[in-house]
Length: 122
Image (cartoon, rainbow, N blue to C red):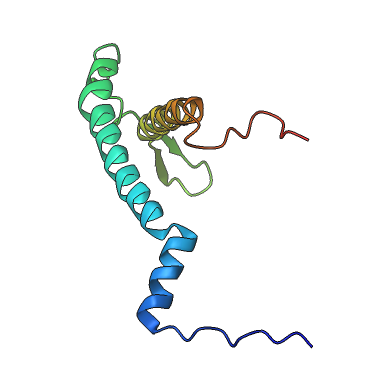
């Protein structure tokens, strides 16, 4: 007969710290905060540097304020489509995606993260 000893009784605090270690919650929280800070920096870069530089070549003078007014032939109402703001947000996203990609390449080069692009060894 195989008798296993009863599992060790842990306090709530011990179970909580085991949970944090097992699921890497602290690392995830740090990554989330760093990502939010990096996103704010990129957004500031796009709003304060990219938009004004692009605006030099635009008739409106600012990328974010570019828009098209469309009037309905049925009701006569006018809608404003802010395509300049959408374009600025697309540039923002592409810069953040590029930074994430470059960070992934560096981290996978030093084997800090697993490179998912290579086939798994059999």
